[in-house]
Length: 342
Image 1: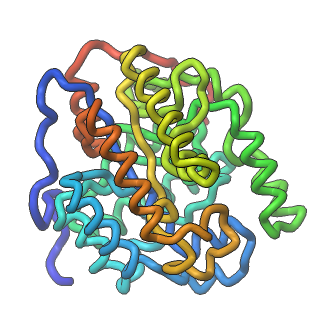
Image 2: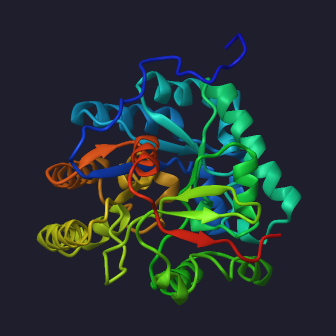
């Protein structure tokens, strides 16, 4: 690829402003690669950076094109920095999708980083994504919902419009317990990951978008990954797919409960996807140990399409940048003072 990257898409323009009057639901996909799953699991083979992007990205684009959807892909900087991944990543923008920053090394202990490490994670990833896709991201999501107060001024300094790292649920410690039970981790690795997925107190965080007010008065939009209003249990697709293992009817009933609660509370959801929501061990055999990988890629795709169509009956499905623009142009948002900045 030659020529200097620009801030404009290289292919079709992303979907335009949302239509007035209809509630929105933003859809995003954290583009966690094969190596990042191995790394989280404690498998040293991650260091070779094995990738499935060449196979996964075309599959995801076909599904989204068939449904007429444009979404936001949060890209890991280490993947964007690999020349062999650039064609796959640039194809996302060429298809009209948005790109966001998902950190450089995809380490869910990002909240333990020093200020200089945070600056590197954000800036190096922005640079790598711009070089790979031609577009500089202005949204961020921490790996494993990891964030800290010191991160937010770093995002603002880098020109980011929004953060999307928070998951307001009380189930984090339960997820962490399951993770420690299944992963092959040393005592040192367990210590580093002890804050993974957050605490019970995260269930008290705002579920609707709000603005962080930084120490110098600047503001940064926060778009949480939406959980079921009041109950604060997740309904991103990985959770729905887990319910489908017991009963597809149960999955849909839970989804409709979540949709009803969002509509009743005026919550415009941010709906999260991951690569393993679309592929099974038939496409990623090295990840057979992950929950749900015994479900075929075709079956996962069918379930996802059903869920997206159900959401689309009640909300206009848009990328996160469109959602962010609607939020900042709408009624004043709740403001949260940022304490404990590093």
